[in-house]
Length: 181
Picture 1 (cartoon, rainbow, N blue to C red):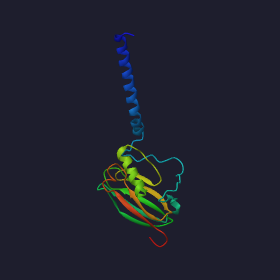
Picture 2 (cartoon, rainbow, N blue to C red):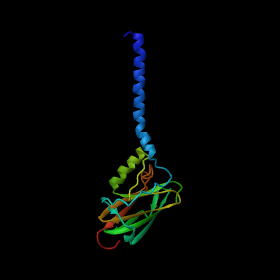
Picture 3 (spheres, rainbow, N blue to C red):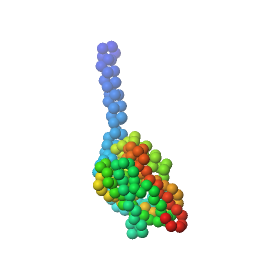
Picture 4 (cartoon, rainbow, N blue to C red):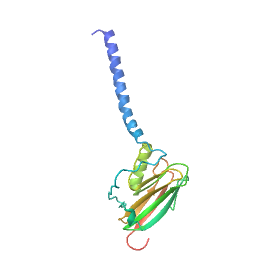
C-alpha cells in the first residue's frame, strides 16, 4: 500500500477510536442524568415498602408508631432537634419539614454509611436514591419516615445532598435498650 492511501485510513481509524472513547466516557453521565437529583420530590415507589434489616433498624408500619417526632431542616444546614433519643424496639414516625429555600433530605444511617453515601453524592450530585430510611423534602414541604429501631446504639440522621453533610447538616439518634427515652 502506498503512503498517500494509508494516511486517510489511519486518520479515519484514529477518528473512529476517539468517537468510541467519547461515547464510552459519556455513557455513565447519561445514566446519571436519567436519575437526576432535582428540586422535585422523588416519585413514590409502587407497591409495599421493602423491609430490609439495617444496622440502624428496619422500615416500620405506620400503625405501630406510638410516637411522632417532628424535625425541621433549614438552609443554615442544621436540623432541629439535633439529637433524638428512642427506645430499642420503638417504632417512630418522623415528620420532617423543610423550612428552607432549597431541597433537603433526612437520611437515617450509621456514621460510616452516611459518610460513604455523602462522598458519593459529591462525586455524583445528580444521583437519585430512595429507601425507606430517606425522605427528600422540597422547600416548604413535609416528608415522613416510619422506622423501627430494633438495635441499640448511636446513629445519625443527615442531609446527604452534596455540600450539606459537609456543611454540618447532621444529627444524632441514640437508641437505648430498655428504659425510657
